[in-house]
Each structure stands twice: as C-alpha cells, then as structure tokens.
Length: 271
Image (cartoon, rainbow, N blue to C red; front, side, top):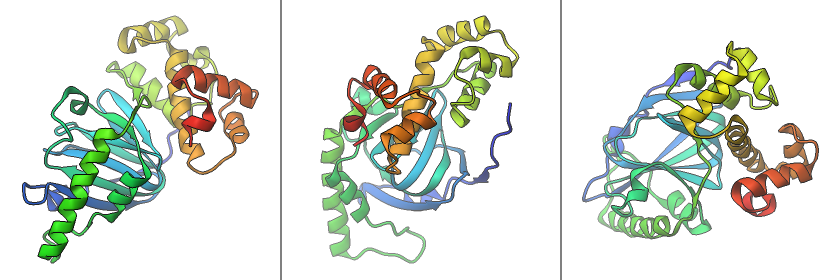
C-alpha cells in the first residue's frame, strides 16, 4: 500500500473552556485548521454539532466516519469518542449543547444534517469567545446568545438527516483496508485490487464485509465515493470533473450511482 500522507496530531482543543451550562446552554467555538491536521480521539460530556464554514473535515467515531463539507453538519452525542482529520483547510465551527434538541432516539447517535441558510447564519452569529481568557459577556450579550441558541435548537429539530456516513468495521484487517479506501478511493476499481494490497483473498474480504458491515464491498465503496463527491462539489467543481476524478466513464454513469444511493440527482443532492 502507498503510505498515508503525514498528519499533524494535536490535542482536543481545550473544550473545557467552552463547557455549556444551564446559564449558557449553547457554546460556540471556532477552529482554524490546516490540511492534514488531526485532532486526537477525545469525547465530551455534552452533545456537539460540527459545521465547516469553509473547507472539509472528516470526523471518525468507533463505527463510522463522516465527511463534513460546508453544506452539511454532524451531530455527535455526549460521550461519543471522535477524532478529526482536516481534508482541506477549514474554519470549523462547533456548538456544545447542554441538552440535545430532543431527548429521543435519533439524537442518541451520530447523524449528518442538512444546513439551512438560517442555521448557518445563526451558528456564525454565536459568540466564540472562551471563558478563562478574560472574555466576559455583558447582560445584553448573554441574552442575545440565549435567543440565538433557542433559534438554533428550532432549526436543528427541523434539519433533514442525510445518509452520508460510512460504516467502519471492528475487525482490524478489514478496518485497515477500509482506511486505505478512504484515503485513496480510486486507487483500485475492484475488490480484487484492494484484497491484493491487504494480503487477503477477495473471497475473505467479501465475507468480512458481509459479516462486519452487512453490505457488499461495492455498496460500501459507493458511500465512500458519494462522500468524496460531496466534498468536491463544495469546491464548486463541475459534475463532469467530479465524475472523471472518481473513475466514472461518463457523467451519466456517475449520476446513476448518485440516484441509486440517495434517490436524488446530483444537481439536487449537491446543491
């Protein structure tokens, strides 16, 4: 296998300075991160919404990984360990929530959400100053933060979930292969090529995919390509360019894959 590009590991970005409380139930933080920066695995005792104002980041949890371009946001429940890898220079906004938008099952697991223009504007308007750095909100600023926070919760409850996560296996051999596909999904077009790199037989790899992830390699790789395409679309690349760079013979073949995967044409899904 080709070596992975070097990464710059950093700590969990001092989240304790932004701890949400009953008095300040939603706290906002801004991270300006360079390509290939990696935030080491960590977790918080509160829920988190990650939204990339610019650039693309990848968040990985135990059982899956998610690409987050500016058109989407990722909800991470309290206590879920996650790591962040910067795919393209990113201004990452995170909201820390004292309580989730609703104490129901969907908010107890990671989920990708569409970002409305209003939700984006509200997140950008949240104060990103940290306690412990000399920044103290005035009573008017505190009231404004609470009002914006209430609107954020309303928008989150209305946000449409998008099936964009890529499941990851527990088996170490298969997880290593999956990580290689995530790093360079078009290195091989077939299972045989990836199996050869991993030193396992195609039959063994196919069996592990069914056992570990309940899907075929082809279906799993399509989800990887879909996430990659979304990140490329965020850079305003033409659909023909995206199709070509992802190894599709024509834009129509790529469009057919998108329709099968998400039930919508690329023009609608990537907008």
